[in-house]
Image (cartoon, rainbow, N blue to C red):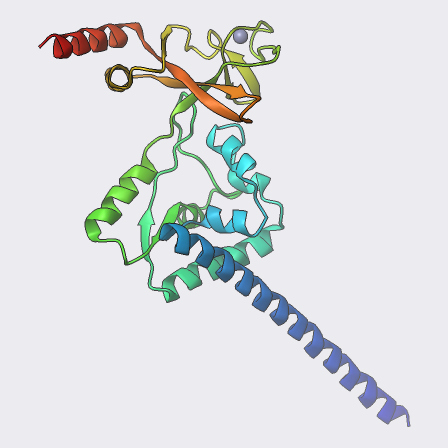
Amino acid sequence: MYASDTTDSISRCAFARITLANVAADRQHTLEQRVTRSAEAVLAERKVVTAIDVLVGLGWLTPARVGEWRQGRVDYLERVVTVDPSKLSTAMRLFRRWAQRSGLLPSETAYVARSRDRGALRFSTSGNPNIERAYRTHWVSREFSAIQRRRLAERQSRPPELVVISPIKDWTCTGCGGTGSLLLLEGPGPMCLRCADLDHLVFLPAGDAALTRRAKRESRLSAVVVRFSRARRRYERQGILVEEAALERAERNCLGKRAT
Ligand SMILES: [Zn+2]
């Protein structure tokens, strides 16, 4: 009686363990399906898919948070991912396996901050080089030719433009407590152009595309100026900030071109 009870409870335990293992396998299976769905959707649209795309697709990361990280306002990306590390690393592994099985080609991409120092962005809590590389690797469709793939890699590795905001509300600089007509969002909060070391730049209003292009090319440092339009509910380009000497050179160049 006693013996049979024990056997019974042992088998019940074993059964419970098997069930738990099944549940874990099911969960992984579901996660794999979600990772696959998310990755396939992006691939179908853009023919290239990144780990960040998948995390956004899974709802673990918002585009707004990615934007803050790209501005250098978040020290590493995993800080703003909303799932626990083990689930995250499982998803990263599943994504890589899916990409390899799908025959996609890996392309390592530079991630540079949209900030004045153009620093390399960090992804992971640990900073482990292999994990960092996994995030930096974009997976590209074989539908692209070798030349197209190289151009794509160049475009995606290019540092993003600095963005300066022409604010529509009152604001206070986190550096000096002052204010101004333009601000830079970087680090802990808004900064005036003097605190951001951008006050030597001059404003060139949008409108002359050729002059804008030249001035930007001539200038070692430049920024796009945007202002939020309440009517259109989006940020709109107002012009650019460039070095004064660069603008003068560009103007001379454009005048010379137009005179001839
Ligand atoms: Zn300031």
